Image (cartoon, rainbow, N blue to C red; front, top):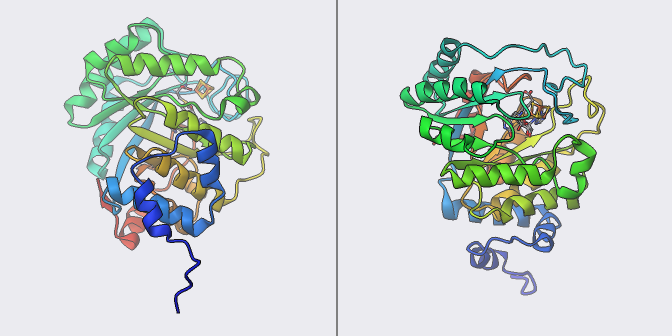
Length: 328
Ligand code: SAM
Ligand code: DTB
Ligand code: SF4
């Protein structure tokens, strides 16, 4: 028999699918929903904008590793933390192109070049420009994550054929000071504005599991959702707790709380590619499957992120086969 007091979640969700919540209160309320209701809403929004069985794949390469002057407390590449990551000079162009070809062969459509800098110096940028031009010529989408950009640098990258620039807000403004002291939240927003003004696609997300509260996770999503236009790609990273970093002993975030965060991101950023990013190697297949169900439709693909591990191509292929997922 029908229980007439049960709310019609289906109709309500479809009706609200077109008006993404942006206020902190509305985003906080999503986190508080019963899990099944949250997942249903996220799937409904996801299906309104994407094929739910297709996943985009990006491969990362660290073009310049370690020795970074910044003090990001999660990061194994900061010179201030003793993590065993060796400082390395910039990779040669040929090495980068070999990695890009291997990623293309494995099925990645986007190639993301990361550098452990506060921001690129002018001669650094000349080398990256060359890499972007050549990777683009291989027929891949190009992405770079080089830190803070000065006026004119985003335009140089755009002219070389860069498609996306990744720069994360990392966390909520209220928690940010606990994590990083060498650059301000506003510096990040300024770089994002320069990237947008140059006509580049924006890839911007954050990290969870750094000891922030649920309200602060909502605060991060609210900041991302308030970017206008919203970022085309939104990486949601689960903190990789690296020995030697100040966050190494942070208690692990419950996997289902991570899934909730992905679902809320999907609802608040309905048209963005939401990327299940760092932390997949430490996740079960079941948790990853829930993240895809929650609306994640992109991953980092390849057995390394920048300095830490990522599932091997073969494991991801098996997971895709099991779940009936195909590349986007
Ligand atoms: N140095 C540049 C910058 O910080 O903008 C670009 C590279 S930096 C490593 C890119 C992003 O990687 C950071 O913003 C952060 O979100 C993410 N990241 C770094 N270490 C991480 C970790 N241990 N776990 C999860 N994400 C991490
Ligand atoms: C992003 O949001 N996550 C990626 C990419 N953008 C550059 C980096 C994750 C790094 C994880 C730690 C490491 O491998 O050093
Ligand atoms: Fe440097 Fe980027 Fe790591 Fe911060 S996140 S220490 S800026 S490489």
